[in-house]
Image (tube, rainbow, N blue to C red):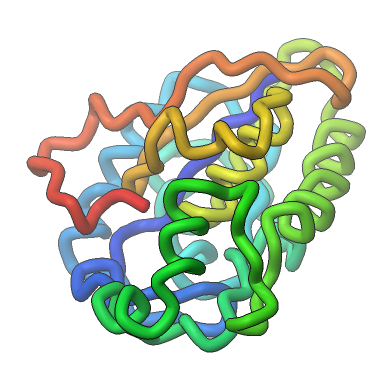
Amino acid sequence: MKLYFIRHGKTQWNLEGRFQGAGGDSPLLDESYQQMIQVGQFLRQTPFVHAYASPIKRARITAQRVIKELHQSVPLTLLNRLEEFHLGKMEGMAFSAVKDQYPAELDAFRNHPERYDARTIGGETFAEVTARMTPAIRQIVAAHNHPTDNVLVVSHGAALNAEINALIGTPLADYRKRGGLRNTSVTVLETTDGQSFKLIDWNDTSFLTATATPTDTI
């Protein structure tokens, strides 16, 4: 089966360069709705049996809009385990302010996951995020174990980056080496048993007409 992971549409805080995390949620930008339509059109020829999403509003709305554009009857289930990283004190802060106040934490979070110590900010570690997300992915696979099943999973940039890398066995220190995930990008994994996963496509944005900007990717 194949899992199609979609990062949510771009929000106001994405545009402003602010951390949202699981506790922050700013409005989706008008332009992001057009990009959700483009995702749905891109995936329209692929039959999906189910969709799962983080319950955080930006991910939930993205899932609903993409499903609408598929022109298929696809059930949607919300799972708390698909939420974004809990980023504690960094949530709502501008990247520039975090760089001034928590330079070591910011550098580790972005570039050296194996060094990231979340205790200072009161957030989740990479290990804690993947420990809650992996059971959700295995639950999804177990529920749709027909070889031809395709499933949508709509979540968040940092959490998806960590979880997808964990699923395909990437060492923690190398999680960021493929780069980040753009808003409304599609990443595809394939599995036969829910234990081992193969990367089919990473951060596909070929269907988006808008020119990418630095604030699109985390």
